[in-house]
Image 1 (cartoon, rainbow, N blue to C red):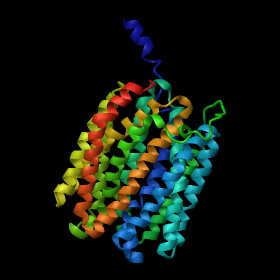
Image 2 (image 1 turned 30 degrees about the vertical axis):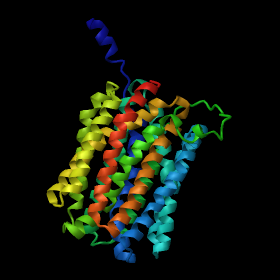
Image 3 (image 1 turned 90 degrees about the vertical axis):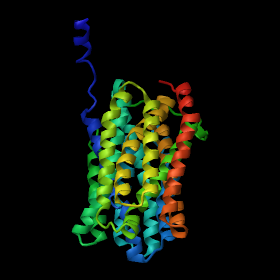
Image 4 (image 1 turned 180 degrees about the vertical axis):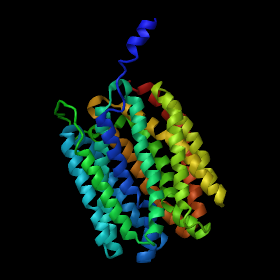
Length: 402
Protein backbone atom coordinates (compact mmCIF):
# COMPACT_ATOMS: atom_id res chain seq x y z
CA UNK A 1 0.00 0.00 0.00
CA UNK A 2 2.80 2.38 0.82
CA UNK A 3 4.47 1.62 -2.49
CA UNK A 4 1.28 2.48 -4.38
CA UNK A 5 1.04 5.83 -2.59
CA UNK A 6 4.61 6.71 -3.49
CA UNK A 7 3.99 5.91 -7.13
CA UNK A 8 0.77 7.93 -7.44
CA UNK A 9 2.03 10.99 -5.58
CA UNK A 10 4.75 12.25 -7.98
CA UNK A 11 2.61 11.42 -11.03
CA UNK A 12 0.05 14.07 -10.16
CA UNK A 13 0.23 16.66 -12.97
CA UNK A 14 1.44 20.15 -12.17
CA UNK A 15 -1.33 22.72 -11.86
CA UNK A 16 0.69 25.95 -12.10
CA UNK A 17 2.52 25.18 -15.33
CA UNK A 18 4.09 28.05 -17.28
CA UNK A 19 1.24 28.46 -19.76
CA UNK A 20 -1.45 28.39 -17.07
CA UNK A 21 0.48 30.96 -15.04
CA UNK A 22 0.76 33.23 -18.10
CA UNK A 23 -2.91 33.04 -19.00
CA UNK A 24 -3.78 33.58 -15.30
CA UNK A 25 -1.65 36.72 -15.09
CA UNK A 26 -2.80 37.91 -18.50
CA UNK A 27 -6.43 37.60 -17.45
CA UNK A 28 -5.67 39.45 -14.22
CA UNK A 29 -4.15 42.34 -16.20
CA UNK A 30 -7.12 42.47 -18.59
CA UNK A 31 -9.59 42.75 -15.75
CA UNK A 32 -7.34 44.97 -13.66
CA UNK A 33 -6.96 47.54 -16.43
CA UNK A 34 -10.72 47.56 -16.92
CA UNK A 35 -11.80 47.65 -13.28
CA UNK A 36 -9.17 50.27 -12.44
CA UNK A 37 -11.64 52.91 -13.63
CA UNK A 38 -15.07 51.28 -13.12
CA UNK A 39 -16.04 52.56 -9.63
CA UNK A 40 -14.75 56.07 -10.38
CA UNK A 41 -16.56 56.56 -13.69
CA UNK A 42 -19.76 57.83 -11.99
CA UNK A 43 -17.65 60.46 -10.21
CA UNK A 44 -15.79 61.29 -13.44
CA UNK A 45 -18.99 61.71 -15.46
CA UNK A 46 -20.61 63.74 -12.70
CA UNK A 47 -17.66 66.08 -12.12
CA UNK A 48 -16.44 66.41 -15.72
CA UNK A 49 -19.69 66.45 -17.71
CA UNK A 50 -22.27 67.26 -15.02
CA UNK A 51 -24.20 64.03 -15.66
CA UNK A 52 -27.02 63.09 -13.27
CA UNK A 53 -27.51 59.58 -11.80
CA UNK A 54 -29.91 58.41 -14.49
CA UNK A 55 -27.64 59.62 -17.30
CA UNK A 56 -24.65 57.95 -15.65
CA UNK A 57 -26.52 54.65 -15.53
CA UNK A 58 -27.45 54.87 -19.22
CA UNK A 59 -23.92 55.84 -20.22
CA UNK A 60 -22.21 53.06 -18.31
CA UNK A 61 -24.70 50.36 -19.31
CA UNK A 62 -23.60 50.68 -22.96
CA UNK A 63 -20.39 48.67 -22.61
CA UNK A 64 -22.28 45.83 -20.90
CA UNK A 65 -24.85 45.75 -23.68
CA UNK A 66 -22.07 45.55 -26.27
CA UNK A 67 -20.27 42.79 -24.35
CA UNK A 68 -23.58 40.97 -24.00
CA UNK A 69 -24.17 41.13 -27.76
CA UNK A 70 -20.66 39.96 -28.70
CA UNK A 71 -20.22 37.18 -26.14
CA UNK A 72 -22.38 34.48 -27.79
CA UNK A 73 -20.56 34.99 -31.11
CA UNK A 74 -17.23 34.97 -29.27
CA UNK A 75 -17.89 31.48 -27.96
CA UNK A 76 -18.55 30.20 -31.47
CA UNK A 77 -15.45 31.91 -32.88
CA UNK A 78 -13.23 30.59 -30.09
CA UNK A 79 -14.48 27.04 -30.71
CA UNK A 80 -14.14 27.29 -34.49
CA UNK A 81 -10.95 29.27 -35.23
CA UNK A 82 -7.33 29.38 -33.98
CA UNK A 83 -7.52 30.57 -30.38
CA UNK A 84 -4.17 32.32 -30.50
CA UNK A 85 -5.30 34.62 -33.31
CA UNK A 86 -8.67 35.27 -31.65
CA UNK A 87 -7.08 36.09 -28.30
CA UNK A 88 -4.35 38.37 -29.65
CA UNK A 89 -6.55 40.33 -32.08
CA UNK A 90 -9.30 40.93 -29.54
CA UNK A 91 -6.78 41.81 -26.85
CA UNK A 92 -5.11 44.37 -29.12
CA UNK A 93 -8.43 46.10 -29.88
CA UNK A 94 -9.22 46.10 -26.16
CA UNK A 95 -5.88 47.80 -25.47
CA UNK A 96 -6.28 50.38 -28.26
CA UNK A 97 -9.74 51.55 -27.18
CA UNK A 98 -8.42 52.77 -23.84
CA UNK A 99 -7.04 55.65 -25.89
CA UNK A 100 -10.62 56.73 -26.59
CA UNK A 101 -11.12 57.76 -22.96
CA UNK A 102 -8.12 60.05 -23.23
CA UNK A 103 -9.44 61.94 -26.25
CA UNK A 104 -13.18 61.97 -25.48
CA UNK A 105 -14.10 65.62 -24.96
CA UNK A 106 -17.85 65.26 -24.51
CA UNK A 107 -20.28 62.95 -22.77
CA UNK A 108 -21.47 61.66 -26.14
CA UNK A 109 -17.97 60.74 -27.30
CA UNK A 110 -17.16 59.12 -23.97
CA UNK A 111 -20.34 57.04 -24.16
CA UNK A 112 -19.44 55.89 -27.69
CA UNK A 113 -15.94 54.77 -26.68
CA UNK A 114 -17.22 53.14 -23.51
CA UNK A 115 -19.86 51.23 -25.44
CA UNK A 116 -17.42 50.08 -28.13
CA UNK A 117 -15.00 48.91 -25.44
CA UNK A 118 -17.46 46.25 -24.36
CA UNK A 119 -16.97 44.25 -27.57
CA UNK A 120 -13.23 43.40 -27.30
CA UNK A 121 -13.54 42.99 -23.53
CA UNK A 122 -16.30 40.42 -24.00
CA UNK A 123 -14.45 38.53 -26.72
CA UNK A 124 -11.05 38.62 -25.00
CA UNK A 125 -12.32 37.24 -21.71
CA UNK A 126 -14.11 34.37 -23.46
CA UNK A 127 -10.94 33.47 -25.39
CA UNK A 128 -8.68 33.74 -22.34
CA UNK A 129 -10.87 31.58 -20.09
CA UNK A 130 -11.12 28.91 -22.80
CA UNK A 131 -7.34 28.89 -23.30
CA UNK A 132 -6.93 28.47 -19.52
CA UNK A 133 -9.02 25.29 -19.65
CA UNK A 134 -7.01 24.02 -22.62
CA UNK A 135 -3.65 24.35 -20.85
CA UNK A 136 -4.85 22.75 -17.60
CA UNK A 137 -4.20 19.03 -17.02
CA UNK A 138 -7.55 17.25 -17.16
CA UNK A 139 -7.05 15.70 -13.71
CA UNK A 140 -6.85 19.14 -12.10
CA UNK A 141 -9.26 21.07 -14.31
CA UNK A 142 -11.98 21.63 -11.70
CA UNK A 143 -9.46 22.99 -9.20
CA UNK A 144 -7.68 25.03 -11.87
CA UNK A 145 -10.92 26.68 -13.02
CA UNK A 146 -11.50 27.76 -9.45
CA UNK A 147 -8.09 29.36 -9.14
CA UNK A 148 -8.43 30.94 -12.58
CA UNK A 149 -11.58 32.70 -11.43
CA UNK A 150 -9.52 34.22 -8.66
CA UNK A 151 -7.65 36.27 -11.30
CA UNK A 152 -10.93 37.96 -12.27
CA UNK A 153 -12.05 38.44 -8.69
CA UNK A 154 -8.74 39.79 -7.43
CA UNK A 155 -8.51 42.24 -10.30
CA UNK A 156 -12.10 43.35 -9.75
CA UNK A 157 -11.41 43.87 -6.07
CA UNK A 158 -7.87 45.30 -6.18
CA UNK A 159 -8.36 47.53 -9.24
CA UNK A 160 -10.73 49.98 -7.54
CA UNK A 161 -8.49 50.10 -4.45
CA UNK A 162 -5.49 51.12 -6.53
CA UNK A 163 -7.63 53.55 -8.54
CA UNK A 164 -8.90 55.40 -5.49
CA UNK A 165 -5.46 55.76 -3.95
CA UNK A 166 -3.91 56.76 -7.27
CA UNK A 167 -6.64 59.34 -7.88
CA UNK A 168 -5.74 60.94 -4.56
CA UNK A 169 -2.04 60.80 -5.44
CA UNK A 170 -2.76 62.43 -8.82
CA UNK A 171 -4.87 65.15 -7.15
CA UNK A 172 -8.08 64.04 -8.87
CA UNK A 173 -6.55 63.69 -12.35
CA UNK A 174 -8.71 61.05 -14.08
CA UNK A 175 -6.57 61.21 -17.22
CA UNK A 176 -3.68 59.65 -15.30
CA UNK A 177 -5.91 56.70 -14.43
CA UNK A 178 -6.83 56.23 -18.08
CA UNK A 179 -3.12 56.15 -18.95
CA UNK A 180 -2.50 53.53 -16.26
CA UNK A 181 -5.29 51.36 -17.66
CA UNK A 182 -3.78 51.67 -21.12
CA UNK A 183 -0.36 50.52 -19.85
CA UNK A 184 -1.69 47.58 -17.84
CA UNK A 185 -3.76 46.37 -20.79
CA UNK A 186 -0.62 46.53 -22.95
CA UNK A 187 1.21 44.37 -20.40
CA UNK A 188 -1.60 41.81 -20.59
CA UNK A 189 -1.42 41.77 -24.39
CA UNK A 190 2.35 41.17 -24.35
CA UNK A 191 2.02 38.36 -21.80
CA UNK A 192 -0.74 36.59 -23.73
CA UNK A 193 1.40 36.71 -26.86
CA UNK A 194 3.99 34.48 -25.14
CA UNK A 195 1.57 31.63 -24.33
CA UNK A 196 2.30 28.33 -26.08
CA UNK A 197 -1.05 27.09 -27.28
CA UNK A 198 -1.76 23.34 -27.30
CA UNK A 199 -2.42 21.66 -30.62
CA UNK A 200 -6.14 21.36 -31.28
CA UNK A 201 -7.85 19.50 -34.07
CA UNK A 202 -10.30 21.65 -35.98
CA UNK A 203 -13.56 19.81 -36.64
CA UNK A 204 -16.01 21.92 -38.65
CA UNK A 205 -19.51 22.03 -37.24
CA UNK A 206 -22.17 22.06 -39.91
CA UNK A 207 -24.79 23.44 -37.50
CA UNK A 208 -23.46 26.99 -37.64
CA UNK A 209 -26.87 28.62 -37.26
CA UNK A 210 -28.09 26.38 -34.43
CA UNK A 211 -28.73 28.05 -31.09
CA UNK A 212 -26.38 25.74 -29.17
CA UNK A 213 -23.37 27.07 -31.09
CA UNK A 214 -23.87 30.51 -29.53
CA UNK A 215 -25.32 29.69 -26.12
CA UNK A 216 -25.12 26.60 -23.92
CA UNK A 217 -28.80 25.70 -23.99
CA UNK A 218 -28.25 23.01 -21.34
CA UNK A 219 -27.21 25.73 -18.89
CA UNK A 220 -30.09 28.20 -19.24
CA UNK A 221 -31.20 27.65 -15.63
CA UNK A 222 -27.70 28.32 -14.36
CA UNK A 223 -27.51 31.39 -16.61
CA UNK A 224 -30.79 32.79 -15.26
CA UNK A 225 -29.52 32.38 -11.70
CA UNK A 226 -26.16 33.99 -12.54
CA UNK A 227 -27.95 37.01 -14.00
CA UNK A 228 -29.61 37.62 -10.64
CA UNK A 229 -26.28 37.46 -8.81
CA UNK A 230 -24.48 39.83 -11.15
CA UNK A 231 -27.41 42.27 -11.07
CA UNK A 232 -26.73 42.74 -7.36
CA UNK A 233 -23.01 43.10 -7.90
CA UNK A 234 -23.58 45.62 -10.70
CA UNK A 235 -25.65 47.86 -8.44
CA UNK A 236 -23.30 47.83 -5.45
CA UNK A 237 -19.93 47.92 -7.24
CA UNK A 238 -20.93 50.78 -9.54
CA UNK A 239 -22.55 53.10 -7.01
CA UNK A 240 -20.61 52.27 -3.84
CA UNK A 241 -18.08 55.10 -4.30
CA UNK A 242 -20.55 57.89 -5.01
CA UNK A 243 -22.93 56.58 -2.29
CA UNK A 244 -20.12 56.57 0.26
CA UNK A 245 -19.13 60.11 -0.65
CA UNK A 246 -22.63 61.64 -0.77
CA UNK A 247 -24.35 59.89 2.14
CA UNK A 248 -21.66 58.57 4.49
CA UNK A 249 -18.98 61.20 3.99
CA UNK A 250 -16.44 58.55 2.94
CA UNK A 251 -14.09 60.13 0.42
CA UNK A 252 -11.05 57.85 0.53
CA UNK A 253 -12.49 54.82 2.30
CA UNK A 254 -13.93 53.18 -0.79
CA UNK A 255 -10.47 51.72 -1.31
CA UNK A 256 -10.85 49.91 2.01
CA UNK A 257 -14.24 48.59 0.87
CA UNK A 258 -12.69 46.86 -2.13
CA UNK A 259 -9.67 45.75 -0.07
CA UNK A 260 -11.99 43.91 2.32
CA UNK A 261 -13.84 42.49 -0.68
CA UNK A 262 -10.51 41.15 -1.97
CA UNK A 263 -9.65 39.62 1.41
CA UNK A 264 -13.00 37.83 1.45
CA UNK A 265 -12.40 36.52 -2.06
CA UNK A 266 -8.95 35.17 -1.20
CA UNK A 267 -10.11 33.45 1.99
CA UNK A 268 -13.05 31.87 0.23
CA UNK A 269 -10.76 30.47 -2.48
CA UNK A 270 -8.49 28.93 0.14
CA UNK A 271 -11.34 27.40 2.13
CA UNK A 272 -13.25 26.29 -0.97
CA UNK A 273 -10.34 24.72 -2.85
CA UNK A 274 -10.80 21.33 -1.16
CA UNK A 275 -14.48 21.24 -2.09
CA UNK A 276 -13.63 21.88 -5.74
CA UNK A 277 -10.87 19.24 -5.70
CA UNK A 278 -13.43 16.80 -4.30
CA UNK A 279 -15.89 17.83 -7.05
CA UNK A 280 -18.45 19.17 -4.57
CA UNK A 281 -19.32 21.95 -6.99
CA UNK A 282 -23.01 22.42 -6.19
CA UNK A 283 -22.30 22.46 -2.45
CA UNK A 284 -19.70 25.20 -2.89
CA UNK A 285 -22.11 27.26 -4.99
CA UNK A 286 -24.90 26.99 -2.44
CA UNK A 287 -22.61 27.98 0.43
CA UNK A 288 -21.40 31.04 -1.46
CA UNK A 289 -24.92 32.16 -2.31
CA UNK A 290 -26.14 31.99 1.28
CA UNK A 291 -23.12 33.99 2.48
CA UNK A 292 -23.44 36.67 -0.20
CA UNK A 293 -27.20 37.14 0.38
CA UNK A 294 -26.36 38.02 3.96
CA UNK A 295 -23.70 40.46 2.72
CA UNK A 296 -26.04 42.34 0.38
CA UNK A 297 -28.74 42.50 3.06
CA UNK A 298 -26.19 43.91 5.50
CA UNK A 299 -25.18 46.59 2.99
CA UNK A 300 -28.80 47.61 2.39
CA UNK A 301 -29.81 47.49 6.05
CA UNK A 302 -26.97 49.28 7.84
CA UNK A 303 -26.39 52.81 6.61
CA UNK A 304 -23.15 53.40 8.49
CA UNK A 305 -19.44 52.71 8.20
CA UNK A 306 -19.63 49.33 9.93
CA UNK A 307 -22.28 48.02 7.55
CA UNK A 308 -20.43 49.56 4.61
CA UNK A 309 -17.15 47.75 5.34
CA UNK A 310 -18.42 44.52 6.92
CA UNK A 311 -20.70 43.83 3.96
CA UNK A 312 -17.72 44.09 1.59
CA UNK A 313 -15.92 41.24 3.34
CA UNK A 314 -19.04 39.06 3.48
CA UNK A 315 -19.91 39.67 -0.20
CA UNK A 316 -16.32 38.81 -1.12
CA UNK A 317 -16.53 35.53 0.82
CA UNK A 318 -19.79 34.62 -0.88
CA UNK A 319 -18.76 35.50 -4.42
CA UNK A 320 -15.43 33.71 -4.01
CA UNK A 321 -17.26 30.45 -3.35
CA UNK A 322 -20.08 31.01 -5.83
CA UNK A 323 -18.46 32.11 -9.09
CA UNK A 324 -15.85 29.34 -9.67
CA UNK A 325 -18.44 26.75 -8.73
CA UNK A 326 -20.82 28.12 -11.36
CA UNK A 327 -18.06 28.24 -13.97
CA UNK A 328 -17.38 24.57 -13.32
CA UNK A 329 -21.10 23.89 -13.70
CA UNK A 330 -21.15 25.41 -17.18
CA UNK A 331 -17.99 23.53 -18.21
CA UNK A 332 -19.32 20.23 -16.84
CA UNK A 333 -22.61 20.63 -18.69
CA UNK A 334 -20.83 21.10 -22.05
CA UNK A 335 -18.92 18.67 -24.28
CA UNK A 336 -15.25 19.47 -24.89
CA UNK A 337 -16.05 20.89 -28.33
CA UNK A 338 -18.17 23.62 -26.71
CA UNK A 339 -15.78 24.97 -24.08
CA UNK A 340 -15.81 28.39 -25.68
CA UNK A 341 -19.60 28.38 -25.81
CA UNK A 342 -19.80 27.35 -22.15
CA UNK A 343 -17.47 30.18 -21.12
CA UNK A 344 -19.27 32.72 -23.25
CA UNK A 345 -22.61 31.63 -21.76
CA UNK A 346 -21.66 32.25 -18.13
CA UNK A 347 -20.03 35.56 -19.06
CA UNK A 348 -23.07 36.57 -21.11
CA UNK A 349 -25.28 35.89 -18.10
CA UNK A 350 -22.92 37.87 -15.87
CA UNK A 351 -22.85 40.82 -18.27
CA UNK A 352 -26.63 40.82 -18.62
CA UNK A 353 -27.05 41.06 -14.87
CA UNK A 354 -24.38 43.73 -14.40
CA UNK A 355 -25.85 45.83 -17.20
CA UNK A 356 -29.33 45.60 -15.73
CA UNK A 357 -27.93 46.40 -12.30
CA UNK A 358 -26.11 49.49 -13.54
CA UNK A 359 -29.17 50.68 -15.47
CA UNK A 360 -31.91 50.04 -12.92
CA UNK A 361 -29.63 50.92 -10.03
CA UNK A 362 -29.15 54.35 -11.58
CA UNK A 363 -32.88 54.80 -12.15
CA UNK A 364 -33.75 53.78 -8.59
CA UNK A 365 -31.01 55.95 -7.11
CA UNK A 366 -32.16 58.96 -9.12
CA UNK A 367 -35.88 58.70 -8.33
CA UNK A 368 -36.05 56.85 -4.98
CA UNK A 369 -32.55 57.08 -3.50
CA UNK A 370 -29.59 54.75 -3.01
CA UNK A 371 -31.27 52.78 -0.24
CA UNK A 372 -33.99 51.52 -2.58
CA UNK A 373 -31.37 50.59 -5.15
CA UNK A 374 -29.41 48.54 -2.62
CA UNK A 375 -32.55 46.85 -1.27
CA UNK A 376 -33.40 45.90 -4.84
CA UNK A 377 -29.93 44.36 -5.18
CA UNK A 378 -30.44 42.31 -2.00
CA UNK A 379 -33.93 41.19 -3.08
CA UNK A 380 -32.80 40.04 -6.53
CA UNK A 381 -29.87 38.17 -4.96
CA UNK A 382 -32.23 36.42 -2.53
CA UNK A 383 -34.60 35.48 -5.37
CA UNK A 384 -31.72 34.02 -7.38
CA UNK A 385 -30.54 32.04 -4.37
CA UNK A 386 -33.98 30.56 -3.80
CA UNK A 387 -34.15 29.63 -7.50
CA UNK A 388 -30.80 27.87 -7.21
CA UNK A 389 -31.93 25.60 -4.38
CA UNK A 390 -35.33 24.93 -5.95
CA UNK A 391 -34.33 24.30 -9.58
CA UNK A 392 -30.68 24.77 -10.50
CA UNK A 393 -28.85 22.45 -8.08
CA UNK A 394 -30.83 19.32 -8.94
CA UNK A 395 -30.69 20.11 -12.66
CA UNK A 396 -26.89 20.30 -12.59
CA UNK A 397 -26.45 17.08 -10.61
CA UNK A 398 -28.77 15.26 -13.03
CA UNK A 399 -27.37 16.61 -16.31
CA UNK A 400 -23.62 17.07 -15.71
CA UNK A 401 -21.37 15.17 -18.11
CA UNK A 402 -18.39 14.67 -15.77
